[in-house]
Length: 190
Image (tube, rainbow, N blue to C red; front, top):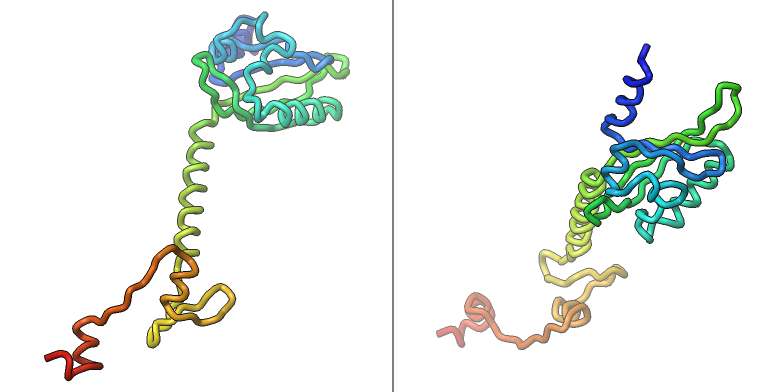
């Protein structure tokens, strides 16, 4: 069994950010890792002070998830951007669970957070790559191997020049290559 000082060291030095909210949904504890990550004091983070660090685009969604879960006494998980001590937003995976007093009554929430920025950025890079591949695939133009007409998105076949003119700003000037000159106009090829 852990002693009180061992338990305290475990909580303060765990490689995760830990928080606690009381029955009023106000945070009343953050471990040392949280405070170091944020670069703020317990007093600054206390209550709703910690929420000052949530990215403005994520704030309303996070607040809704937290309060809805709190009112239902349900476990929640969410990701949001939280400002680190250096002013840079990092993606955080936050999991909160309700906890009880010794008599079984609701005591609030305990939460743990980990920095998942690398995973989120890798997923974004993969998504961008996949979207780029889709753009390339959408750019494939069906062309007849004999007459060189192009099928449009309605299934109609069009002359190459007409299709390109309708889908770009390209203009054409016609000429004849040496091979076609010999094949189609042998008398002019000499």
